[in-house]
Length: 151
Ligand SMILES: [Zn+2]
Ligand SMILES: [Zn+2]
Image (tube, rainbow, N blue to C red; front, side, top):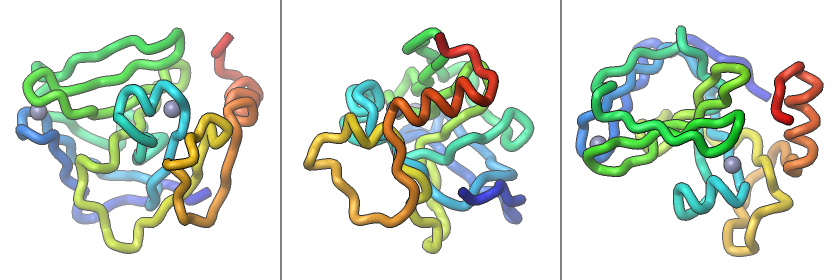
């Protein structure tokens, strides 16, 4: 899996209406995909995200238009109160953010990185991509091994 790199110039992203803007200074150059049932209900498809972004890696404007939903004991999902765009998934125990990839105009060479929860993927969401694929159980085991309290 790719390591985070400094982005110069920073990547600018925004929701559909522009009330929330994000300036990303560091990220892993690639788009991760979550095929879990919750992400599918939340987004209407797989969640394409810039994964594992820390608080120090970005600045945010328009916080007043951000609504956060606690979707499980360990996760929050944020959206724009004005236009409904999904903004990020936050893994609470690590404090990391996964920004929805569609907020940003990404460099053309950023492909798909890791695909997770592939065991919950419906046939229509199969992507023609190489790279690591993990089941939900593998992802959860990894988080526990990392010392995160996810029950
Ligand atoms: Zn908006
Ligand atoms: Zn998911």
